[in-house]
Structure formats: C-alpha cells, structure tokens
Amino acid sequence: MTEEHPTPPLPPPQPVGAPLPYPAVGQPQPRRLPVLFWIAIVVGCLVLLITVLLIIAAVAIPNMLAVKKRADETSAIQTMRTIGSAEANYMVSYPSGYACPLSVLGGDPKSGAPTAQAAQLIDLSFADSGEKSGYTFTVTCGSKVSINNKDIYSSYAVIGVPQTVGKTGDRGFCSDENNIIKVDPDGGTNCTQSLQ
Image (cartoon, rainbow, N blue to C red; front, side):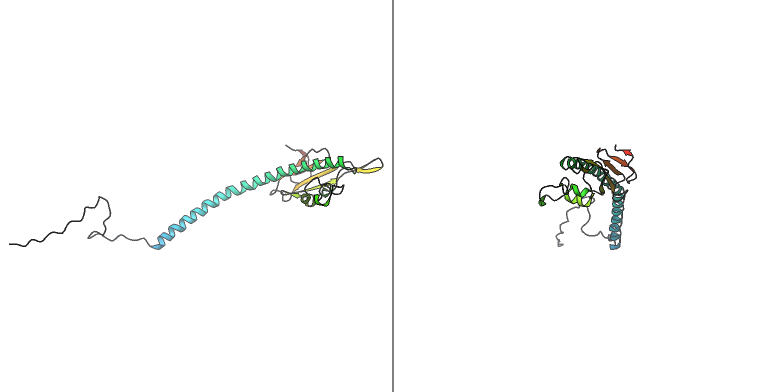
C-alpha cells in the first residue's frame, strides 16, 4: 500500500489584472525610477508654475497701475472741487477775499475756533503738505481789489499736478474762482482743455 500525502491547499485565485504578491517566476523585477527623475519632474513643474505666474504678472501689473493712475486722477479732480468749495466758503466767511496759500484753508480744530489764517475748511495734513493721492496741489492768489478801504484777493488759481507724470497721473488740472476745472494732457500747468 502506498502512503498518501495530503496535498496542501491551493491559494485563492488572483483576480485578472491584479498584481501578484510576489514576482512571477522568470519575470524581471519592476524597475524603480531613480531619485533624479523625480527631482527633474518637480523642478520642471516649478519652472512651469513660475513661468505661468510671470505671464499673469506681466498682464496684471500694467492693468493695476493703469487703474491706480485713473483712481489718482479721479481723486485729484474731486480734490480740485473740494478746494473750490472751501475757497467759496472762505470768501463768504472772511473779509480778506480768497485764501492763499492752501495752508490757510486748513487749521487744527483742537487749537480753537477757525480764523482767517486757519479756516479749518479742509484736512489739516493735506493743507500743510498739499499732497494727496499722487498729486501736488497749490493755491496762488490773483489780484487784489480795494473794498471799503480794505484790500482783498478777488481771484485765485488752483493747480494739481502728478508727482510723477505717467505713474501717478497723466494729466494736470487747473481751476480758479469760477470753479471750472481745465486739463493739461501733458501733466503740467498749461491747462487749455475742458474736463470731460
């Protein structure tokens, strides 16, 4: 009689296409990619990302500068109107006529009541510096007239020019006691065009 040996159980069948838990006999081992390959992939992705960001910046930055320049010009126009209104109020409030220079329209409210030398009609820091939103503003008085034996300024001129033409604004602005704003398209004080 022959002795029977029990046969070991077979492993469960692997699904089709599933990797074997061990390499099949006679098949080469899977090759691992070298570290330098992965470094090259990461560096390539970073270079691509930086290139895309530089392209976006090249398009976006000039647009942002143009928007800021337009905002500065819009602010300058509003400031010209504010100075004109302050001059009109000053003319009504004080017997000396229009205010010159710009600092006269300012004044610190903490120092007491408004006076002819510190009318408190515009912001103190703006009145002292004459600078706002990339523009520099000046007020100069015109001629004097004598009313009731008192000399008063009967006219004034306001000028607002960009601090850096082409960067903080392209146009210069001028106004006078009529509060009509005119434009110098070159950013200077030769204001010959109407504001549009």
